[in-house]
Amino acid sequence: MAAFFCGIDQPFYEEESFMKRFSFLFALIVLIFGATGCSSSSSSAQEEKKTITIGATAGPYSDQIREAIQPYLEKKGYKVKLIEFNDYVQPNIALDQKEIDANVFQNQMYLENFAKTHQMKLQPLISIPTVPIGLYSKKHTSLDDIRDGTTIALPNEPVNQARALTMLQQLGLLELKKDVEPTKASEKDIAKFHKNIILKPLDPAQLPRALGDVDYALINGNFALSSGLKLTEAVALEKTPDYYLIVVTIRPEDKDKPFVKDLIAAYKSKEFAKLIKEDPKYKGYVWPDWFQKQ
Image 1: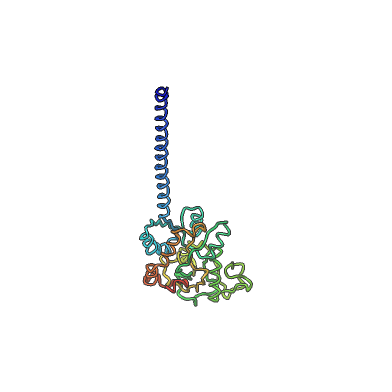
Image 2 (image 1 turned 135 degrees about the horizontal axis):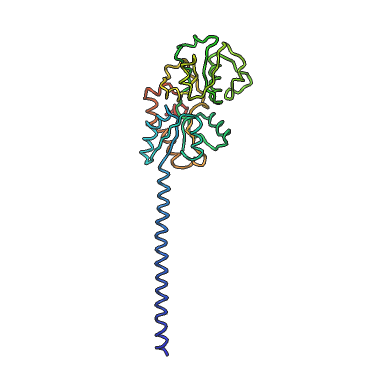
């Protein structure tokens, strides 16, 4: 009987042992491939974080990125893509839709107004050296030439129009109503003109091209410089308050990510400071307080 049972039990135990070994090997293979898959996904995620796409309007701020910010980030191991825009609308839409990771073109007042109007969640990151808005002319070299009937073009976009009107008040050409907040002033808030000038609101990007058709134009710095104008050619330059300084803008959910910290470090780097302080083309820029201490 014993031999009979041994003859039956032995294959059974061998089969059971084989199944255990097979199950163990199968589980091990699944674990290895699973770990490899996770590792690949993790590596892919890390690689994606090493590409930064920045949007900027053509001109000084895209130049700053190319000349100092991009090289700094590339040394940190990033691949930097720069996308240039020619208006003040698309850079924020692209950022909101996650087509870019940051943009550099707008002041904080414009950002707040745009985000509220378009129901977007966007966040200023750091203010940077800024080109002041300027009064330019191809026909005149002095404010003394302003007479009754003089035509002055200015931005039609609300935030920068308020900025232009405030500058015209500072120049003594008009007076705004006393109860109006300067950052929200529009043409309807003009109390009186000291000279009968004619204002011509235009798209900010079109203002440099309008110089041939008007006596003067108040032009945002980036559009002025990208069109070939120089700060030294301006009849007058704005005394730029902090809230009109250009800011790097991001999405709030990215504020603690490594690439954002490295972007701040790039703007606070000695390479960026050297560019702004030593390159003649950046002479006349308005510096944020933090930059003055560099």
